[in-house]
Length: 300
Image 1 (cartoon, rainbow, N blue to C red):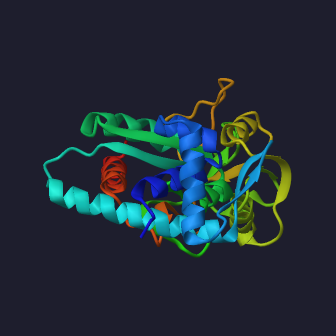
Image 2 (cartoon, one colour; image 1 turned 180 degrees about the vertical axis):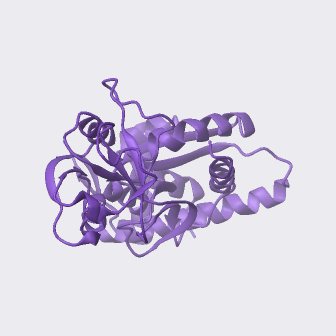
C-alpha cells in the first residue's frame, strides 16, 4: 500500500482545479510537490489520471474521473471518523466548496454565508456561481462538494435533499389589466407577449408552464438574466413566469413589477442541496445543510 493520504489530497485538489499550480496555491505547497505526488500516485496504481496540456492545464481521463470519486469518498470517510473521534463539541472547520445556481444566489447565498460565519467561524466556504449544467459539472468534476440549485437537469449519480419548494407566479407590468387581481389563469393572457427567462432547463420549464393553457407562448423577448426579464416586464414589454419572489417590486431602473398567483394546478420547482451519491457528507457539508434549512424555514 504505497498510496498516501497526501497523494490523495493533492490529486483531489488538482482534479478540482484542473491545475497543478492552482492546487499548489490552495494547499500552500510547491507546485513540484503536487506534480510529484500525482505522478507517484499514477505509477503506484498503474493508470494515467490526467492529460497534461501545456497551455490549457489538466484534463481528467476516464480513469481519473472514476478514481476522483473514490478518492473523495475515502477522504470524506476519514474526515467523518476524525469528527467522531473529536466529539460533537468540536467546532466545524476547514473548507467546503459550494456551487450555486445563478438565479438562486442573490436570494439565498448572502444570508447563508452570514449565518455560517457566525455559527461556524472556522468554516471557509468557497462559492462557484453557475447555471444548471455548471452546477452538475462542478459536482461531477470534483470542483464542488455541494450544489445549491433547482431539481432540474441533474444527472444520475447525484443525490439531492429538498430545502424549499417554489410555486411559479406571473410577473406583470404595473399597468396591466390583471395586475391587481389575486390570481390569474394563464388562458386569460392569451397571445400577449411573453418575456422568457432563457437558461438551460429553465426555458423548457417556463415554456411548458406558459403553454399549459393551450397554444404556444408568444415569446417576444428572452434573456438569461432574471433581473433583465423583470425590467422588461416592468417597462410593459410583456408578461413572464418566474419562481423566486424578491421582497420588493422594484427593478434596476426604478420600475415596478406586479406579481400575481397562477390559478389552478401548476408544477412546482424544488430547491435542493445536491452532492455525489458516492461522496459521504462531511461535517462541513452537514453544517451547510443544517444552516440552509433553518434559513429557509425562517424565510430569510
